[in-house]
Amino acid sequence: MKADKANSDECYTPAEYLQLARDVLREIDCDPASNEAANRVVRASVFYTKADNGLVKPWVGRLWLNCPYSRPRPWAERLIAAYNSGAVSAAVAVFNANLASRWFHPLAEQAWRCEPFKRIAFWGPGTIGGTGWSASCFFYLGPEPQRFAAVFSAIGRIVPPAAVTQGVTASRFCSVCTRPLPVGWRADADTCSSKCRQRKYRRKVAA
Image (cartoon, rainbow, N blue to C red; front, top):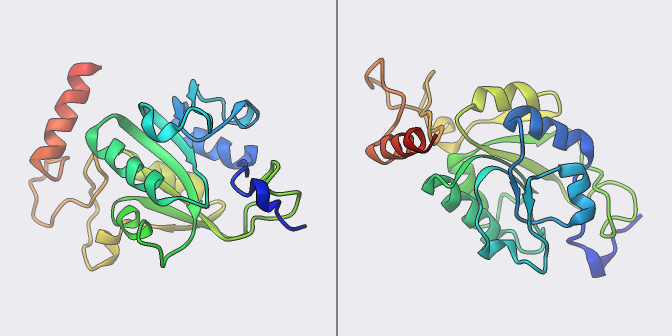
């Protein structure tokens, strides 16, 4: 069945994938691109609808994101900014797997991702049954990339951030941004920069 073009962005993530996201995040505090029907499955503490315009609302805590596929770039940029600022402590997001898009590579530079072995059968008025109209991938930003890899490897291929695949090998990663720690870094170091050390300190004070 073809998707309903008039509601093409109204494609909601099936419960089986959201359970994987909850297994990684443990709880979902915020979903900035949702509605009441979708949130019955997501079960986010706070969610924003199309009328709310989640792009201008606060993003905090552990985040789930399934943004409009017709306009992913501002959502990807906001996700990176919210995570790097420390407002979002961890996030799992599903995007269309469009490697040629300008928004994709900044996200792939920093985030771990899962490339599913099959297309996702979204539900909602934008689907009218069948699988998604394009391939999708899940991105993870947070302090537990190994947990993400262990959970999501059941449904797809795990790809580390671009920094790892571009010749940087590391067995340890920054506890804040998950980037690989530089070769030769102190054995007791767990952050990759002064910026991440400051973010870690602010989180500790706020806890």
